[in-house]
Image 1 (cartoon, helix red, strand yellow):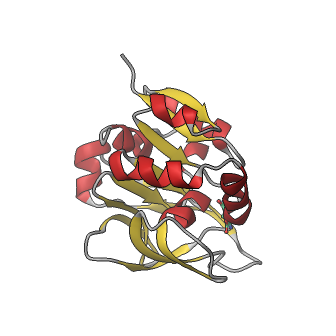
Image 2 (image 1 turned 60 degrees about the vertical axis):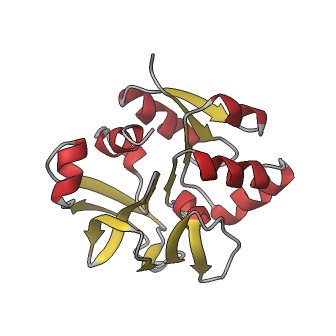
Length: 193
Ligand code: GLN
């Protein structure tokens, strides 16, 4: 039986994540209500616009159910999702769920050159768990992780800043692994379920 993995589908590039999860061997479930959270083994919070996502989470009464879900099951946040999962958000400051002990600055690569594709070299541990070799990382108005707490393990960096990290069962990427055909980052998340 493939694992059922939810993708928060209020806003952002949730369709691309659903396809990436399929490629990685999971069964994606689009999540829009608290009820949808009940049937899934893990949840992806996609990229998009974190302020808008927060408003929609509030509107759908999903904030508390999401907090409770993260207490028990793995959550994977990419870009805007990473911002929502962080402990502290700056530039500007914004509410977040504090699921991973990170301080992030939003839109930190600057306005003019805000999106780029980079080759990153993950730590050997990433290779052992997900498959060896470089990863192509697509950054779109990405946040930068300025602080990672002692419980956070850095799996990949770009220009000296962490871009793929985990804390226990949770995973965060500041880039968009769903926008390439390489499914190793999603497979790594599935291995945590
Ligand atoms: N800049 C967006 C934010 O602050 C995140 C961008 C993205 O998810 N690609 O929410």
